[in-house]
Length: 274
Image (cartoon, rainbow, N blue to C red; front, side):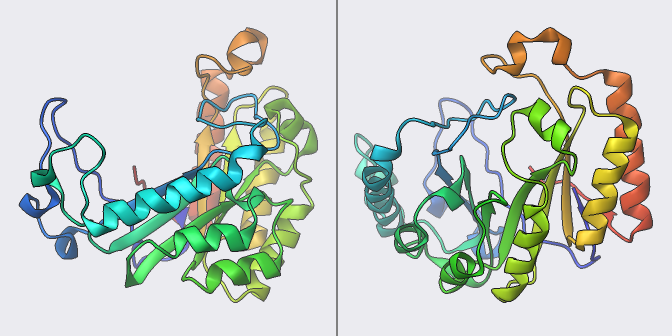
């Protein structure tokens, strides 16, 4: 990832424990000191990208309303400090206010904005929390983003992936490249000044010139944050079944260097969160 500022960015905090050990939040370092991140998964998509190994579904739109209702119940349970089903009451502790919230998927922008807002607004958060929602460029409107902004969303992550249509097709992506600029304009119109653009390098048929054009487009868009991912092959994906489309290590190394040089020259600093 790169960012266009040197002041830092909020990032989710990872807490690890052994497989057989769990501890109540009250025994850990105060969240006010180290931050607390919340991830919300919206698993619905119009189309499954060829490289995607996430838990997503293209045939379950009839479950959206029930899923959001269940999600709201789970958020309220967690924030109230009630124990999870089957858990000991002694381990129940209310979750702290979030310093970062990330709504991903799937395609969160596929869900009715007002319905999603009603769920996300139940998450307790700090006044200075970074609140991000992932969007497909084809879905974005200023009206949608104003609804999200009304509950504190202050950052949008756009799944651009490439500026070249033939590369998008090779990845199994379905959005229109021109809609990325339209989405960026909608972000500004909605009064949100922070956004990220996701791009992927190493797709079948992508030349070094194609990748360079994508990076140039990202810079032209003025994205404060850029997440550049090397294409990986995951078991169970459509891509895994077609070895002739798998990325080449040397090609990806060249594209990594190109992106690093171009984005650094544009004033963006390299950083990584996980």
